[in-house]
Image (cartoon, rainbow, N blue to C red; front, side, top):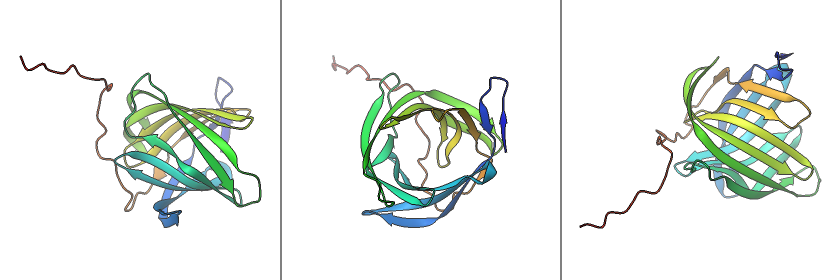
Length: 192
């Protein structure tokens, strides 16, 4: 179900995630996560969450499988005010040529938010994804062991807002507690 809010943004108010099993992508064992949106839009992500962060190895977009080398990553520890930038090459099995995806991620802070799926302690991130002439700005709230709980996306000709309605995480790896903070170097003691 799509509707417009008072600001003219398109709202997609239903998003469901289901862990459907595992799959091997390259040499990595990844979780197969099916994501369903209102109106029937659907895609599958091949992802993994570890103590080092989150990685996206591949995803289905329509009938095509796109594999990212190296994987698109979000490090577990980001420093406020210091964007993290990475590049991956997207390989599609539909015969289209490989393309470079540039990802820039900035840690904004911590927020506790409520969406239809419940109340979550989240890390708020700003992301910018660029691939050729295509660019998307994304504000997202990610919860430990769940993934994206809320997302605001701009760049596809309209603003899209998504909130998690329900999810499953059977056997999905969990980061555990995310350290609060801004992370900053601490002064070293001279021992005197």
